[in-house]
Image 1 (cartoon, rainbow, N blue to C red):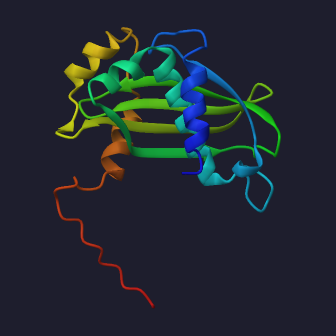
Image 2 (cartoon, rainbow, N blue to C red; image 1 turned 30 degrees about the horizontal axis):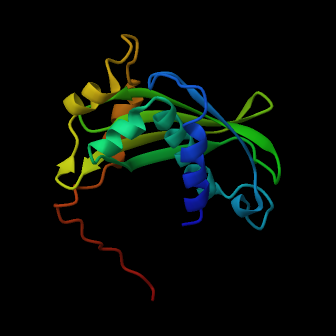
Length: 184
């Protein structure tokens, strides 16, 4: 909820920004707002990932893919993400969210995203996103029909496959019991 209005405003503004291909990198200029910070007066660690949603929306809208996805009833959902931090973004600081697709596999579209200020990377994340409908996940063939053919040099790094395999939870139809013993 905390980014709902900001997301709706972004969807409107991004449709008026210069178009780009879905396989290109998008750069979204932003400023750290009071709602982005925590008690330490810098962007909260969890907020980085929420703000990165805006970067992915910007890329999808500007490439025209968002409109085609919505027409087909597709919704994006994050299935895995990992982030590393280098520096803290401070209140009112200007920065950009740099977003690009780094590849696909049979289940997900993979994004690399960076928070950049003054030409330096402050944080970098890798996000695995699935497209889903009410009937279930959208297949790679359908995704490529809407997104177009990826560049020939677009190949996922091997470590992405290892990360996905080692961090995956069972599918939603498979039991995943919680067996921790807690003190209270």
